[in-house]
Image 1 (cartoon, one colour):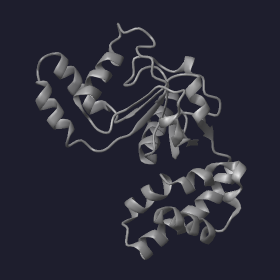
Image 2 (tube, rainbow, N blue to C red; image 1 turned 90 degrees about the vertical axis):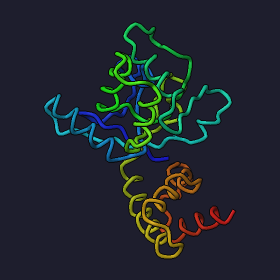
Image 3 (tube, rainbow, N blue to C red; image 1 turned 60 degrees about the horizontal axis):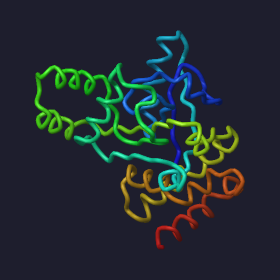
Image 4 (cartoon, rainbow, N blue to C red; image 1 turned 90 degrees about the horizontal axis):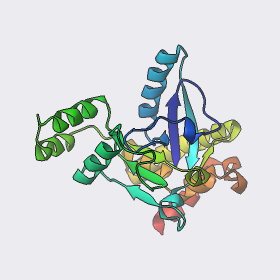
Length: 225
């Protein structure tokens, strides 16, 4: 899976100890599979630090979610369990770390949601009403890498490799749209969440040096399976 981190600078070496505590899923390094979300943070952090802001691209190995040696927690949507977990982690009195998970995935408590969390804690909105509000919220995504062990599941994309991949992926997506009738959003998700893309992102396979037609054939075979 291709993921992104928006900051005031490029982040090649990840140091969890330098990450702020008491965030949604606790102290850790946060990435997202939504590029526009990372771009927003790059602009925001760039303004704070008087830089242009940078989005760093990484490969996140999806098998991390089922790896036998990793403790993983995943939230598919804004749920009561998600809300309770975020409130626990955002509590300034919570210990650091506040939980034992290596990786946590789920939606983001952005500024608007965070404000409503305070309203909920102050008793101005009931939990059922708040959760109903969240069901209409714009989709967001984040993965928090909470431990040194979890960092083994992410790698910075090589610039040359990334350039090759982009030239391959765009026509593959267009072919899914024209040949299989997918809309562009579905086609994009299909590509980036495929085993084919995971292999393409693994530099050791050398697949990024293949033609888009060869990669499309691999993806077609995967989809047929």
